[in-house]
Image 1 (cartoon, rainbow, N blue to C red):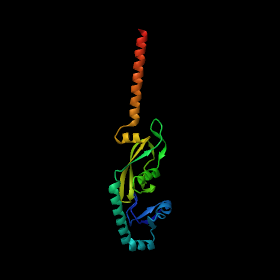
Image 2: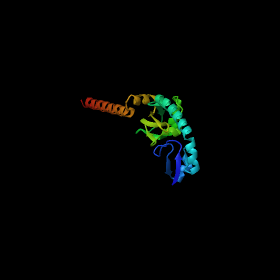
Image 3: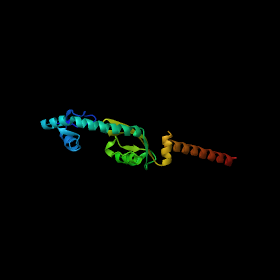
Image 4: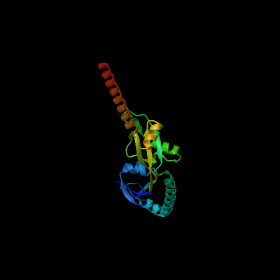
Length: 189
């Protein structure tokens, strides 16, 4: 394990200024290159204590900006048109990049790293996702994955297009069966 001092809040790890033990690969490949932490040496700890006020002020400024954007972005809905099979399974999946591009097209610039995708989206429907604007500010964005713009509108209203199509098919089959039975009845007479 490697001891590092965090330069910002990291979800599920700790707050700014905390000294935490992490695996060497996590520190070497993520925390240190992203400037999210420093190795917990005496020199780095004294450097951090000298810079703490500036780091906290910069963090407050970024947090304030993120909160302003979050008021506008929270609850935003974006539509993604994808091809899928009859069961609603997508041919592929929706990635964080797809979502960040759709949100950017809606007028909010976010990166794919900010989209917190717990599992890949592989089905049609409405999915709620978290977007991290700042380590302390997270908003919810709704992603509507549909076959067409018309189906996206139906899904947004709470109507399941696949179920509607199944009901139509059943009604058509029942009408065809009734017509066939009527024709047989007429032929028998």
